[in-house]
Length: 237
Ligand SMILES: *Cc1c(COP(=O)(O)O)cnc(C)c1O
Image 1 (cartoon, rainbow, N blue to C red):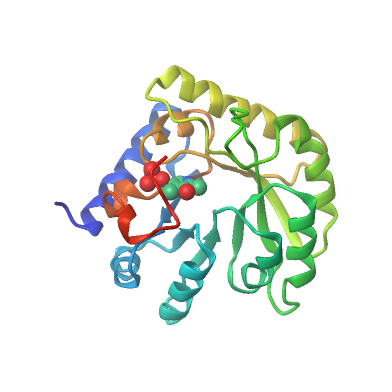
Image 2 (cartoon, rainbow, N blue to C red):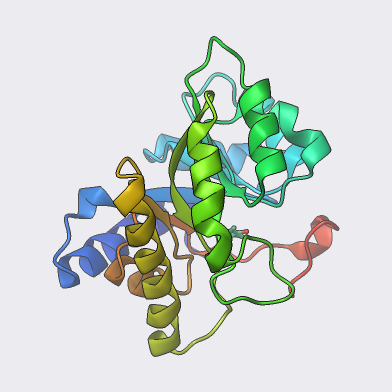
């Protein structure tokens, strides 16, 4: 199996190529390494290869790695479901949250964001394929939620995040990512400060970049397949 450093090089090349095909500047796309279920030393290897932004889905696991890697200047992104009674450590330890889907969570994050830190960067998670099982607000509710979040003093609303229904069909991938892009454009008419589309994972980053992704969230293509049995919180659905 290839190592983490080689994989990061390959993913960077893939991003550059997809950007060029779409007529976009490769530097306009940020690579977020999704490190759920990975050990701290695997993140260290990725960091040594120049990877600075890491995404975690599970709060306690993420906090453990933040503590273990406190000597590195890592930008930490929280990308998993949020329980409203567990917002404080997220507000205190992360730089970005991609998975805000309701006002209650946003209010608490704003109240709990320490005064000495920069405002917490926020993406609203949208259930773009309107799947019953998925988290995220419905597209029709995104505007109202964005208006409320934009008012909160300790948050900086940046844009939208989505995890479309899994499909191998590039046309369907493109459709879902295009829907998210158009939704962001509607929000930008009122909130021009929004600058972020967090979309695209290992299997669909080309389609996401073609539709305007500014952050791609890549796990498997960097770290290899996840070992689900070692993490009972996650099951391959
Ligand atoms: C796990 C995960 C990813 C990364 O998925 P890969 O297919 O491993 O690249 C991206 N975003 C979210 C929200 C995830 O939970």
